[in-house]
Length: 412
Ligand code: PLP
Image 1 (cartoon, protein in one colour):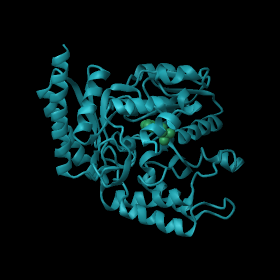
Image 2: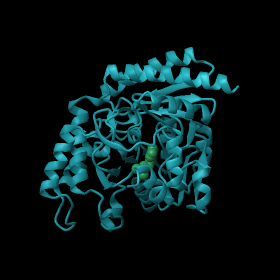
Image 3: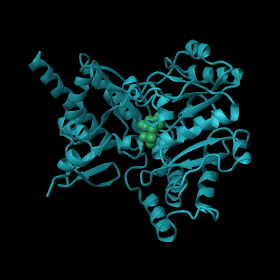
């Protein structure tokens, strides 16, 4: 019988198979619980990538699994004609926990799909065609989301992309102000760039973006697919600077690490487009009862288990330990940064980052670089990671850095 690796080579993605083999990750996963993923031989890996960023509540959180089981036995998918009570409940709960007056939700299946909907809502409600977003930003790989994402290597083969999209340097208020004009439907930003290597903008950036949009009559869309739902130590990263978006985009952890789910949310005024035509945007599986049951359970878990405080505390511990290592390995590590359990470690180049990742994997810790910046290794463990597990990660990082330094010494 062919191995899983061989099946990947032959039927899934041969390039990816090669890449994971290079990083020592060519093993098949088998089951998972909490912060641990087990391979077919029962070897446990501490999951510091988590989807990435999907498993804020850990793998298979019992309350979320139970809610999905209960729904599975009753009605997994909607008739789409009778009202879907779980979708109604999920939308009401989201309105209750999100900042500002984001009263309405469109539920869908992924982050990219949520961004597509947000872009369409912005165009339909403003009557303007343009979008301004950030270089290095990541919003998904469907055509619309790709058009506002900022890495050439993913964009070029698919050009021409959506017209009217302008990219500006992230964190630069003047550049943003200069790019927004009467044709701008929306500015789309991540509060912290995740795939670009955990770039935290200056404190004044998002408040300034809010002001620039309001003055120009453009909408502010915040993509919190990676930063939302407790990951940075608050429910939403925009709450660190008290900025309320016109449209909020969610995904990843939204389904509790058990079901895929995405959403875009906005207030009553923007939602008028649905009053005019309720089917202007729709999805067969978006808002399905299974995903909504997981979503409602996830929001309850965040509240009841205080995952925001857990993310802040464990994130501070992890960042502290990695900062100590940065000082000890100053010739290797250029920077350690992040917020909550979203932490990046920057190296001089992608090869050194690759060696570090391979060293972590040998020590049974899973981490990886972001899609838009292979020089930065991202740690995005569950917020439920224990103090002891953070120490294990720190010890593995220490060993991996020593090993990386030795390899570089040998080849230099
Ligand atoms: N937006 C952000 C900020 C992301 O980090 C990602 C995925 O990494 C996406 C959107 C796309 O989400 P998905 O892969 O679920 O389409």
